[in-house]
Image (cartoon, rainbow, N blue to C red; front, side, top):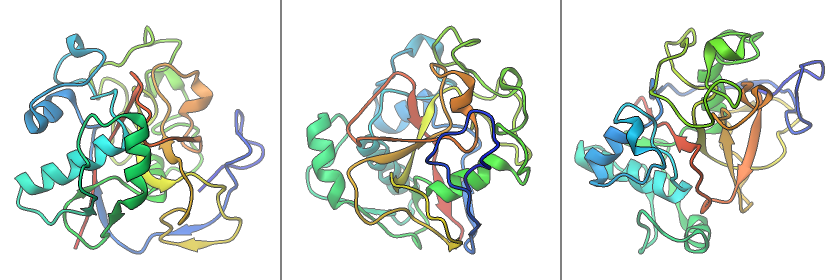
Length: 242
């Protein structure tokens, strides 16, 4: 994970280190779409509903993503990955979400839907092509929607080149929540990292239609409070393969 010090556009929170993932997992080919969200939650919070059902859902908090994952697991008869406090629901205020997020725990052995860990996200985004700057290539225009080519709004999923794993929009379109608390990456090699045990912000990955290309790099990472919501922030789901 992370980037070499020579990588163009890197930030100082991208310390390069070796990561081993020993557990198999599935990850969504696309970001969760407006159509899927509406099918499950019966409403659409997105800032650009006219974009259509095949556009990524946006304007969702980390708490919204957790709630959606558990609801979809319930619908499909899967074990819910998250244990959540009473009162967790879609649409909480930023302050309420920030507070309850501290009491949410995840069972990584459950077969239900969940957010990927940061390490799972980066492995999937790289697609076994470690040298590439973005997910699927070195040309930002070819692989993703960013501030210079998007009109500063999201677009239908999979309109740009997918990566070697067949995954779409892991660079650009909407940024993506992951599970981990935001913290400095470790300098040493790690196995199956799940992020810091403490902290108040959560990691966001992938860059968005409102970001310049340097933020679409696979190595780029940021931290947002769980209750923040933006018109360029969504998520994709993962599942443990057990």
